[in-house]
Amino acid sequence: MHFLRNPATWILVAFALTLFPVSSRAQTDIAGSLYGAFGGTTTNNGTQQSPANQAGGLIELRHIANPILGFEATYSFNRANQTYTSQPGACPAFGCTISTESVSTNAHEITGDWVPSLHIANLRPFAVLGAGILLDVPVNSQATVTTIAPCIGLPCCLTCAQPVLTTTTTSTSPTQTTAKPVYAYGAGVDWGLLPHIGVRLQYRGNLYSAPNVTKLFASTNAFTHTAEPMAGVYLRF
Image 1 (tube, one colour):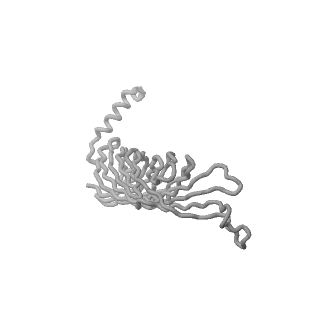
Image 2: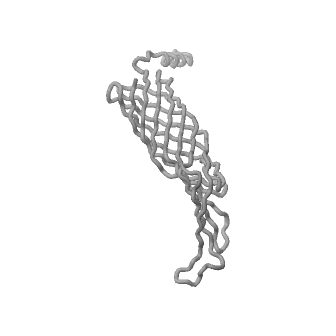
Image 3: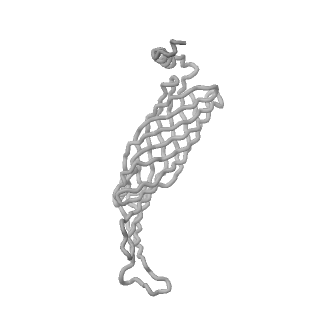
């Protein structure tokens, strides 16, 4: 068994795996999946940014030649509504002025991924690692801003049965499209039900800089994460 201790032996084994006959392993397929997009809140530069949890869809075109050589191109779409809230520093005794803006946004994501996998009976577990571009496109060119400020002086009513301590005003602010690099990772499994049709279950995570789709608030410029558990079907050619 001394030959197993030779590093050259393992290099040859790995090379042989890449040349393993692909007739039982090769797979080219197109798949469609539905997913939930769950993001996190970021805070920086005096702004708190909160994305809404939304549903979306993913299309994949994948080719796997052997366990090591597998690649795919993907396109996904989901609503990615953003809420921005100003975060004032130390407030005076009479309170702070706080503005909130909600922007209805659509997210379009395109990635190219490396997909290593194994083929075990009618199951194919796989991993995903890739990168691409994330476009956040506001639905409207203007968004509504709500500002709540402390009520100082007239016409405040401090002695009424229901004291008026704050004033609320609304206005509009222009929006903008942003394009950000995105890094994708994940894992899943293909379950073959018929010779050319199967179920794909996977989890994908996206890492990217929080989008700044408003011109009113300073960008948080914070790295954030979206979790996307998904399920779908694939058609193998």
